[in-house]
Every structure is written in C-alpha cells, then in structure tokens.
Length: 308
Image (cartoon, rainbow, N blue to C red; front, side):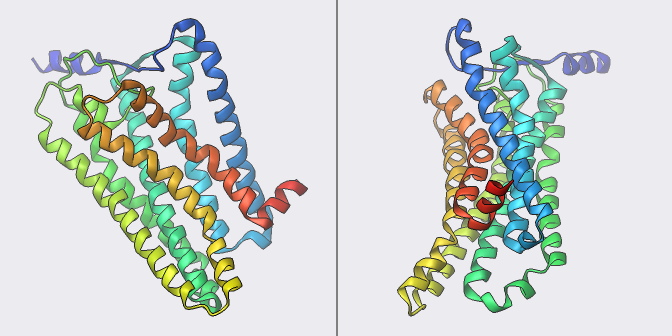
C-alpha cells in the first residue's frame, strides 16, 4: 500500500494556466513577457554592477538597494521559465516536485523582499531622524546581520510549506489559476483536510508581510513626525523627496500582492482573468519597475548609469 501511495505522489501533474486567449496568439503574448524579463534582468544586474564597482555608492541606502536587486533577480528567474513555457511551447504541465520547488522559492523571495523593504524604511528613518549618526548606526556588519536575519526568518516560515504539500493526496483536476505554482493554489487541489495548513499559510502571511507592512507604516509615521518638526520648508521637501523611490517600491510590491491574497481567500466568484493579471503584476512588476524607479530618482545612480 505504501508503494502505491508513493507512486501516486510522484505521478501528480499540475496544469498551469495562461491568459484565456487562442493558442495562435501565444507567440505574440510571449513578446512582452520576454521584454519584461530582459529589462528586469539587465536593469537589476546593472544596478548591482554599479554599486559594487563604485566606492562612492557603498552606503547603507545603496547596499539595501543591491539586496532588493538580488531578490528581484531571483523572482524573475524563478517565475519566467514556466510563463514563457506556456506561451512559447504550450508547455502547461509541471510535476509535483518541480511545482513545490518553484512555490518554495517564489514565497521565500517574496518574504525576503518584504523584509528588505522594511529595512529600507528603517534606513530612511535613520537618515532623516539622525543624519549625523547615520553611518555609525548602519555599519556594514550591522547591515549584514539584518540581511541574514531577514533570510533566516523567511526560511523558517517557508521551509515547512513544500513538506506539508508533499504528503497530500491530489485527486482534483489539478488545474492551477496561474502560470506558476503558489502555496494557496496547490493546497486547494488536495483531497485531504486542509484547514490546519490554510491557517498556517495565513499565519505566515500575517507574521511576515502583515507585520512588515505595519512596521513600515509606523516608520513613515515617525518620519512624518520628524519632517514636520523641520523649520525650513525646503529642507522638509528635500527630506521627503528621499523617500519617494521607496514609496514607489512599496506600492509596486504590496498593492497587487494584498489584492491577490484577498481574492484567493475571499473572492470565490472573482474573474479568472483578474487573478491571472494580478498574479503577473505581483511577481513581474517589482523586478521590472524597481530598477527604473531608482535609476530615475537617485541622481548618483543615474549619473553612473549614463556614464556606463
């Protein structure tokens, strides 16, 4: 009986879903995805190269930006293969092990990115509240420890997910709503009772992204409080202007992600097209737009890119 169950587990196949269009148009749809992949890969790689090679950019703000770029690169590399596989080769099938590996890295990198955005909010608060002590507070060893804690926290939360899903029995149609694997989606395909696993998935989301977003909000409340105490109107605007890039990154990351989470849990009658589009936005927009936003907003970075 055990051998039969092992065979069933290993033979599980999931079907990924693309945009609901005719297959003849798949090649045309693949062009913007290829374009986004190239732009996000080149953009984040250029930012990493410039920050590494320019000693003037070895400051806390740019070190956090390089962490964000590495995470965005990882998200692009993890998600794009199955998306392009659908539109270029009509390859919709994915095995259970491959699906679990993909969802592990997708959620891990998303949780790490959430932590990095929190660290960047802390960086902006220190830069505005205590500019004279900025470099003494955010030293390289301290930044490295903060980054390590962010990775370990995400790892502890995400590591159980693929093991929990591995031992489920899957007897539904196994057609996923997206072009890649997500924990909430794969869990719904199981025949077993998923109540405990659903609660754990919600707990990890609230403990990671919910807590991070709350702390980010509190950081900006403290930033606004500090800025409003600045006498000069010009200095006040200059201080707020340093937060614009980070605010754009927050909106790009949290808006589609929160919307998609709400639809997965409460929007049973929602449009499949809306789910697919929000899924693409949550994973493809941040890696694409973050390098553009920071390149436009940061004068030193923009000057080095133009020079390069």
